Length: 374
Ligand code: AMP
Image (cartoon, rainbow, N blue to C red; front, side):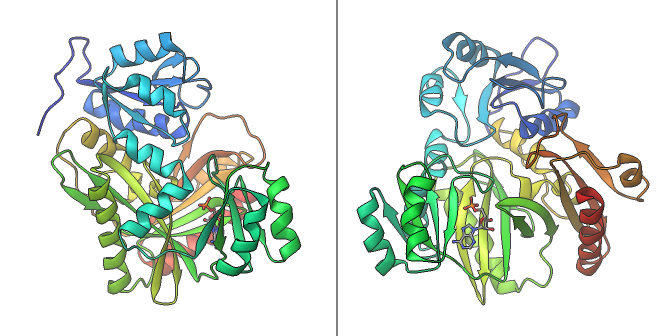
């Protein structure tokens, strides 16, 4: 274990974060009891400025990057679409964890698929569409229905379209902005799952219980963890696959693997090289939250237990602020607001509750969604 040397400013360590949204905010909150100060570099500090040391600036602002490097023992990332040049400019100046190659792989859907292929992890059929003429190949190799996704800069359902007819497929080139695309088979999945795991610099890996996720319009609405009625076999597959990915990327920190359950198979969809919305339940639902474990990992500290307490339910608050008094009246419910202005489709917070069974967790999700969605 290589501990990061302590600083003389009263904090045990400072962790730099590229990005200043809710993930940086929750890293900062998890870091406070450990004496860890989070320093963010962000063009939009709305969600985290009250709990972090914030450097306001563009990601390619040399002055801001220099300040971030000088203030941080280690720098990590809040989202994968950071301009690669910003990360390159930090290399050699400050420790970067997870390794930048993990970021570039996850930011490029093509590289991500190649990674899954290399590791023998099952995925939906796919092909690349680099020009409109490639749709002919997509029709034979992938078929309809399919999902067309931009190769880069897709998140929360942005930059993708489900196509059921050849016309829709061909129209997706212009609709998605005439950029490099990936066409993948539409999977009639039974449910979506994810597994969040953390790897230390010594290669110690701990997995959280896989969660069952519901997305609508590409945005996560809820997670229940452990995923109810998940067979031991699928549970083992999920942890084996995430372990393979972590080892292949020589990863340090938290990573999430999102999957589709289709019959007895898990098809990998994507990875997130960071703390992830499908791991927010761990704040109250596990012995060590994903946020604390990410900080521990990037700082070279021992990892905390990922064991879960009971059956956690997490519901996202999206677009509008719900009646807080009604949420707070629910025994055991924890509210996490992000300090962001309401806007349609925007993640403003989430609520967590730990239930006695998976069935109870499902009931909580149904009731909470009614409350937060109005
Ligand atoms: P992504 O940006 O790839 O995470 O996709 C966002 C959401 O769209 C997923 O969580 C699924 O709900 C849905 N989705 C994406 N790809 C597929 C697919 N190939 N088949 C069915 N649904 C998909």
